[in-house]
Length: 318
Ligand SMILES: Nc1ncnc2c1ncn2[C@@H]1O[C@H](COP(=O)(O)OP(=O)(O)OP(=O)(O)O)[C@@H](O)[C@H]1O
Ligand SMILES: [Mg+2]
Image (tube, rainbow, N blue to C red; front, side, top):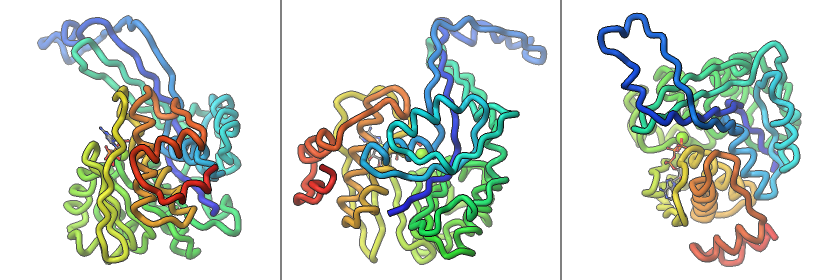
């Protein structure tokens, strides 16, 4: 199955400040702030929703096509994705800009100051999706990105009869009810977390039943509560795969989507698709960063069978 994954491509710069930000934020002086915090450490992680999904999908043996906009600092990141098996030929490079970058500093009290620079991501609306996709694309994933680009990709999939998975996720906050409804209507699959699902219903004025008639399959993830897949007039309850340790929840949702996509590409039933998603999410939970986990197909299958029963289907991964 040929899957194209669209969405943000970004770096995450993560810093830790050994003091308290509040000590330098003087209540009477807030209209002319000039503060600089000397941080102890900084890590730069590869991130962005689309490469996060593509990375885990490649670990599972697929070769997804990554579609997005990146900047002049992307070449090393690009090589790392290619090395794991991601097809990066759908990435457009804009050498006058940096790749989208998220800068976050956390103090001793877990207070955070963050900035998100959109950089090249703002150009993703210039990508003509249909020109980038191979002739036989089976599924396009539309994940959080520049909102205009997301809307255009939806229109493009509809106009060309290409099935798409609609994953507005954190962009539900930014998007209007009308464009969200447009994305859901006709989607092969809608996936969001439970909070985003509530916000989506509120913004669109649509009920759960309405959404079920608009998208073929609706998936709602609920953190440590697992997920629910509404498909074929049924509800599949998907449990989590227990983590050995929780180090960083960032990117669990993306990994869940990758596992789910592997199941869909293999033509497996919804329970199995969801369970593969759960285990992928658990691998991410156990590492800091969203692409620092790794497993071989054999390791994945062995661990899967400690938690779930695939009735031998996962032999296909070996
Ligand atoms: N604490 C946990 N333990 C085990 N599995 C978890 C845990 N949290 C999340 N997961 C798995 O990850 C899936 C997606 O999690 P969640 O609903 O939190 O996504 P999200 O809010 O979109 O995450 P993200 O921070 O990546 O945006 C869950 O359905 C579950 O399978
Ligand atoms: Mg999410």
